Amino acid sequence: MPEPERAPRSVADGAESGLSIVMPVLDEATGIVARLQSLQSLRREGVELIVVDGGSQDDTVALAGPLADRVVATGRGRGRQMNAGAVCARGTTLLFLHADTALPPDAMSAVRHALAGGAAWGRFDVRIVDGPAGVAVVAWAMNLRSRITGIATGDQAMFCTREAFSAAGGFPEIALMEDIVLSQRLRAISRPACRRQRVETSGRRWAHHGLVRTVLTMWWLRLRFWLGASPDALARAYGYTPR
View 1 (spheres, one colour):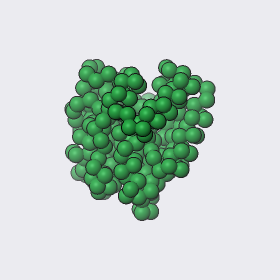
View 2 (cartoon, rainbow, N blue to C red):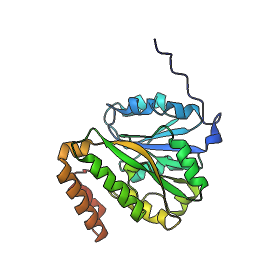
View 3 (cartoon, rainbow, N blue to C red):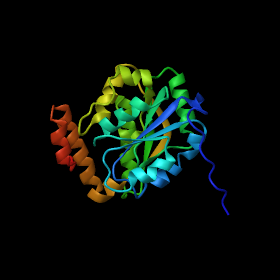
View 4 (tube, rainbow, N blue to C red):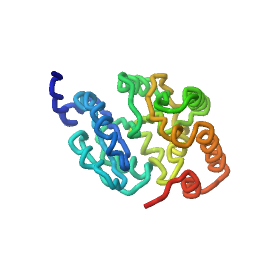
């Protein structure tokens, strides 16, 4: 019979970690409990866990409450949600984690070593799971491109010092590409620490839309973004419908 899970230590009791995880969510009731349960060992070590809901119409908020240090309600949009979480976070280091992404076991050690080495921010390599054949090549290309360009995506669990986040002005509150813009701003402060430890992110969008179609769509959206297209227009093309 498994032992009952111990109650996590409070942030006040374990604040020596100085780390806050901010997770934006929207209608994640089917998977939120498992994802947050996987982070409870970090809470016991003093890591603060903040869930920011963008207006879920399912049971996400109720399910997340007992498993997070704070659940914040705000408007829809990852940039807006992550900024709201950063405002109320107590940690000196912020890590932004998507609800469908899992951290590696040594994530906190990797973050500490990265920032102690002089970088103001960084990200992890990514592995795509539960996707169609070929997603390993997509993940490899994402990691290589990020290492060359110094641009990270939200799937790679971006982290930064609070000071750098403030200096960069936080996430732009746009409908799409908020991670790209923040990367550009942070890159002006320091090169990213590209950790080779891998987060695992869901391949559901590749499975749903097809590998080739998804890759080509993302390339096309990024090209339009670099050419000056409106993030709202790109979001509509991606299938994002504001409420």
